[in-house]
Image (cartoon, rainbow, N blue to C red; front, side, top):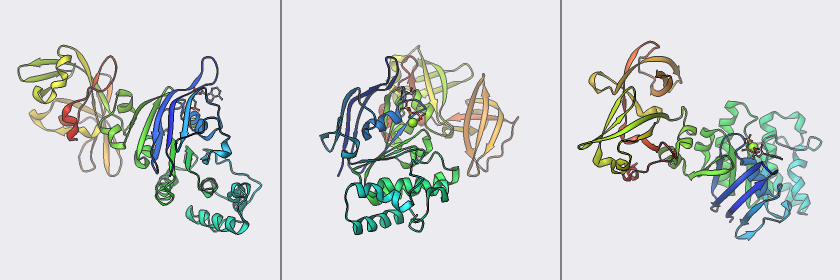
Length: 369
Ligand SMILES: Nc1ncnc2c1ncn2[C@@H]1O[C@H](COP(=O)(O)OP(=O)(O)OP(=O)(O)O)[C@@H](O)[C@H]1O
Ligand SMILES: [Mg+2]
């Protein structure tokens, strides 16, 4: 049982450098939270404050309701795994995993059992006598995981634990880590700047930018109901396409006028856009919501620039007035560079953003998604 609350948490390194400006977050018991954001947004700083490795400038950290803001790291019941493993090179795998248990003065027989149990869980049960130098990168990372998990922490923190592994191993470890989480049920926070890793692992994703949280939500929330253009442009491979359009109400229709196309909506379904009549807004369209259509169904026609086969699907890039537009089409679609294709929009999936604030214009119809 472990809940974590960060209240108005901030870290200032120097007069002008804020690692984290403001974090408010409630992590539920057994939850798997992923902190996601570009380099320098404050992910590691947040983790280090929670682990007690970094002094807090402002705010409070509560673990199970207990204020641990100023408690020594080793008395917090929090384990952390780092990107660079940080396992001790002169100790065997066994000694690495047993180290914290010895510090806790656990009886010898219990240590032996716990080390074996944890090592088996992360599939290094056969490697206990080896030194880290005799292990592959992936195996070393498993040692780091086992060492952190052996103490059965209330809270398990992982800071980009997979980033030193090759692409294939990363994907395997992702699945294994999720399975380990289901088994241990330890409340976990996992840091990554890889959005697909975040989407595939998280119960909820916390998206950060410049030291603040820009959205907290389930993978579906951040993908289908991105809070702003930053999130819509960060999540998804390829990310959303953006078009600036002028919104014009005409009888029972709304025309979205772009320099290269006009899109028609039924105004009844998009009531919330009324206040933008005559103004410019930005629409966000996911690559899979741009459709290849024929004849007069096409909203616009454009020449294909590049086709990127992905096996299960293809990514098609077009050049629309100096902006690259990307769409996802099925593997069977016959398309090659230079082809002229007609494009349509999956209207129900369009995201609307205020051009000034870049925030989402929420529609009532969204609840249907
Ligand atoms: N010890 C430090 N002294 C001064 N500034 C620091 C220190 N550590 C981090 N920073 C700054 O604080 C900000 C947040 O850094 P942090 O390491 O938390 O980012 P991050 O999100 O983990 O990035 P990355 O994805 O690159 O690991 C950055 O601007 C960074 O330069
Ligand atoms: Mg970091």
